Amino acid sequence: MTHRLVMLFVALAVVATTIVFVTRRATTSATPATAHAEEVGHEGHNHEEGEEAHGHDGVKIAGLETAPVVFAPVTAQLSVTGEVHANEDQTAKVGSPVSGRLTQLSGKVGQRVRAGQTLATVASRDVADVQSALTRARAEEQAARARLANVKELAATGALTQRPLDDAEAAFSSAQAEVKQAEAALARARNARQLAADDLDRKQKLAKANAYHGPQIEAAKANVATAQAALESAQAAVKVKQTAYDRSKRLFDAGIAARRDVEAAEADLADAKAKEKEARTHLEIARQTLAREEHLAGQGLYTSAETKAAESAVHQAEREVDTCEAAVQRARGQLTVAQSVLARERQVAGKALLARQDIQGAEADLARARAEVQAAENALRALRAVGAAGNAVSLPIIAPISGVITERRATPGQAVEASTDLFTIVNTDRVWVWANVYEKDLAKVRLGAVAAIHANGVPNATFAGKVTHIGSAMNAETRTARIRCEVANPGDRLKAGMFATVNIATGKGASALLIPKVAVLDDAGKKIVFSPCMDCEDDEATGKSCGSFDKLEVTLGATHGDNVEVVSGVQAGLEVVTTGQYQLKTAFGSGKLEAGCADH
Image 1 (tube, rainbow, N blue to C red):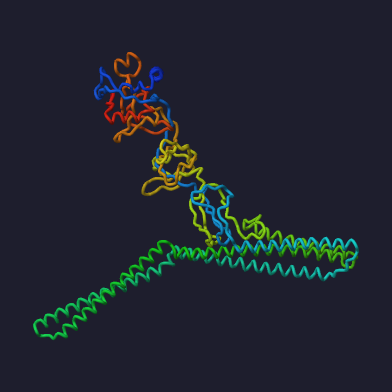
Image 2 (image 1 turned 135 degrees about the vertical axis):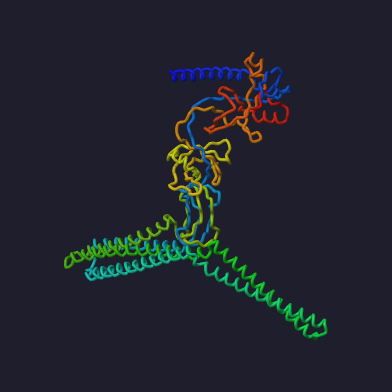
């Protein structure tokens, strides 16, 4: 019975609110925009306690609009503070695939590029060598094709002589030797690669242990200590010489000592002071040297040089392994061809099939030439230079993804290694927003939960995102866990480093009073809204606002899109100003318009 009475009461409240809303909207639409501010106030209001009287001088505001306070269901959400970061899944480090020198540089910081676009061009001897090998292989292929055509023509005329079986056997033996040599070279290359990798691992461990810059710093510290000791010794000597000089001076003044004794003591004192000054200079130099060594160590210059050299050696060894593997593949292909030729020659030995043998030999030559061409093309393809025309020795450095160049570490004419990162490209279409969630709220957050992001640097804008990662560990000091939201970034308005408010949907919530966010203004640290006054007798008689306004202080809750919750200060159905509110605030501040019906 009680539940039914409550439901009946809620239904009556909703009906009453709807009637008030319809009546006020009709009043607003029937009154010209200037009528809201045409008369700032009038006499005869029956103000309750806490309200202030209207002014009497009119202030006209063109285009003034209002919207009602509504009572509607809202989604429960958790509000946390976050920071915008680049999407690491859409960030690419771009470098040169070969060692060489930059001959052209078109990519610039801030430039938007597309996937496949050329950022720079590098001239490389490696590319030139492979291009030359490919040119030679194609020439040999063409010659082998011509020889095959000639042999077939001679075979058709019967002009061929017998070819000994020994030629095929010699070719097979030579192919076997080439395979063994290629495999031995491959084994040496792989061993060199392993040694280079071990050396890189050793140097990385030494770098972590500060082994490269530790001796320099210790030596500099020892020099400082030595210089400090020398200075202290010199200072002590100055004190001794000063005492001796003072004594000689007193004895001379008393007529006991000779002048030469005083002059000798004075010379000793001057010499001791000179040595003190020299020791102080040495100490200053030693301290400067120590500061420089500590700065170099802090910049990681010793470590970087050693590890970069080791990394370059590893890359060089890997390229050598690739070259040897291609050589082994080529030698094995030649061996297979030679074995096939030998088998055929043995079958035809002693028979009248010499012409066929010559044709097969020419075909084998053509197959070898094609294998050479294929190997050279594969090597060129490994360098990403397929399609380079003529004798080109330059290799384009292309963008692997579309995005914006955020970093460039290259200059025209710069010598580069295969391990050098030259560009950083970030796709800004989607960004990450990292936030910290307290332990007590962490259970409310779910993967895939919808999030609304409001960046401080992009006012009056809401960005849609969702939770894509929840940290697996808590911060022991703050008792928070890091979460990550992936957010669409149309127009690149969100910038890395911006602070933002992240509102995460946590489930279905209760109903709340909502007003447009644009209606809320800041007033000396308070949140206020303006509402057309409907409290005086004229207002009640005509059903229209007299043109006066209430300035109401409100307490706000969570944000929901373009609306915000109001905890206190207004009631459902009340109209609030959404266009012209800044002019009203200015009028109140300048004294042209007084507080209105109420100033809460």
